[in-house]
Length: 222
Image 1 (tube, rainbow, N blue to C red):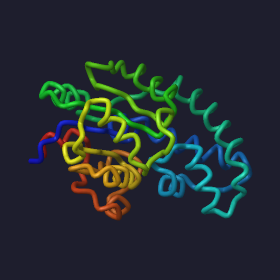
Image 2 (cartoon, one colour):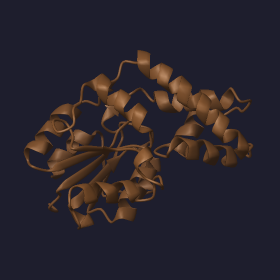
Image 3 (cartoon, helix red, strand yellow):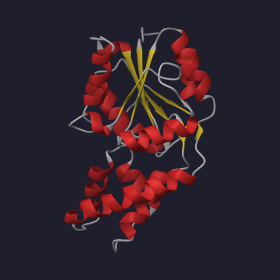
Image 4 (cartoon, rainbow, N blue to C red):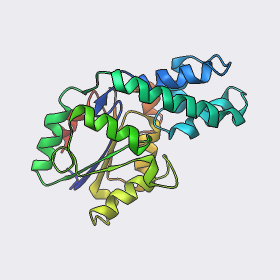
């Protein structure tokens, strides 16, 4: 198989099971502002996006007022912090062993996410995942000026580990935007997983190299 040196893995829905609490909270925050959107609509419109951008995009799609986005985002962020304090978060089946196994083969793992750094760290602390044990670096929406599907997070990950050839990078995620991000970066492999936000039919639209049930199945490919 292609000589993969770096794996860039999305967090919620790909490595971490947080029961779609992000999108449930986002749905609630939008609807508290007088809209009526379903969780299904939010999952298909917003999965994988930086969250302020996601809310703006959603309002545009439902002919809402895009100027409402910052206030909704603030409400969403406050609610999410509160939800995460109480939520039981666990790794998606097999993920922890997968991370340890891949790192033992001297491959680098970067976790990347459309969340803020604060929320991403809150998740990692809950799982007790440590840098240099479970992963090599974390890159969040706070670290880049353009969010997914821009390849900026992946390019930053490559730079961190002096990897100049994108074909040595694998990108995996649970949304179309993750796959587009990987393709925009020129990644050697793009992997969609069915453990998160979007279903097989939706993910197929982005034409990933593989669609797997969970991230740990990547080991069979590597």
